[in-house]
Structures are given as structure tokens and as C-alpha cells.
Length: 226
Image (cartoon, rainbow, N blue to C red; front, side, top):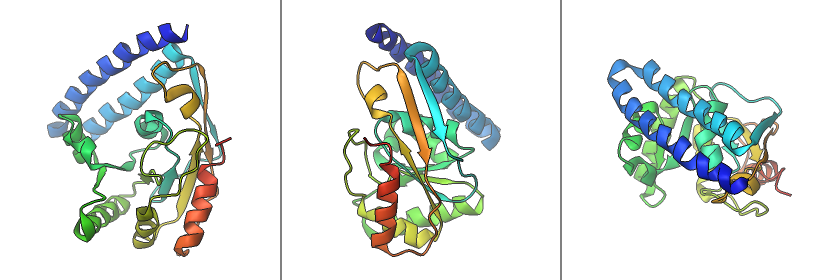
């Protein structure tokens, strides 16, 4: 049954997603509200496909933040990256620079307000990234970052990327860590039915030193990593 569910999921979800990418590009001249609607529809569509085609439920433990805070999310699969527009209202996500090279999607993502992360481009790229992030904060948007830098296997607890603490310090925002356990059901070619849980940790204040902020975030985002 899992094979059949996955066989249906890929063409149905990604087929309609391709149409939504085209719709997002067409929506840009019509204004930010229209683009936001298309992106929100993508998140809703993904959740529908999870529930209906894959038999995956999503549970949230704790209260999700709203407004300009830095949200640090565990990254075990593509699930959480796709789910952010469904989980939050108009989020700004720090995303790998390479993703912005995807035709259509990259252009729409930039206009929507995602922030490209170029780890190998030096101090100038970092300053530009922080400048853009501050503009999003001024608009009242939450910032979402995957502090591990890339997807990791469920059950592993790699150290956070060094850029996370620097971003936290330069932005001067409180951090809300969120654990997620999508790996066992979603991070595989043949996806499995089950439950994906978000566990929202306690808000961590701004102004902590590097060692403490990394330790507290690392502990919180791995709360479901058992």
C-alpha cells in the first residue's frame, strides 16, 4: 500500500505544483497579495496530498509564534521546507542560494521574500543577507532558518552551522526553536503513513553568547529525535 500511495503522490502533488509555479509567476504583476495566495495554496495542497494520498497526519505541540522572531526548525526532509507557508502566515525563509536558480520558482521565491544563503561568498554576502532580513522584520514577518544547514537523518544531532549564531547576534531577535520528526515517514522514496509532529520550544531571548544560544537551540530542535 505504501508503494501505491507514493506512486500516486509524486505525479499528483508535483504535477499540480508545476502549475502553481506558473501561476506564481503570472501573479507577480498583479501584486503581493495574489502571489501570497498562490504560495499559501501550495502549502494547503501539500497538506491535502499528505493526508489523502499518503495517510500522513500533522500534529503541532505548543503555540506557534507570529510576528518578527527568528524561528529555528529541525530539518529532516523536504516536508518542513514545503510546509512553512502552511505553518506560518507570510514567512521569510532562509534558503540555499542554489534553489533560486530553479526556473520560475526561484524568481517567485525572491519576489515572495525568501532570503538566499550563500555560505561561500564572504562578508559582503552576509551583510546583504542581514540587510534583507531586517527589511522583512520591519514588515512584521517571521524569519525561518534551518540551523543545521541541510537535511539530516532522523536520529542524528549534528552541530549547528556556524552562521546561525552570527545571524542571531546580528538580527537581535528572540528565537523560537521547533523540533520536527518528518524523517521516518517522509524522507524516503517510498513514503510511509504515520504522524509528523512539530514541537514548539520555549522562546529564547536575544543577547545570549554563542555557546549558550547554540546549546539551547540544539537541545530544543532535537527534542523529537529519539
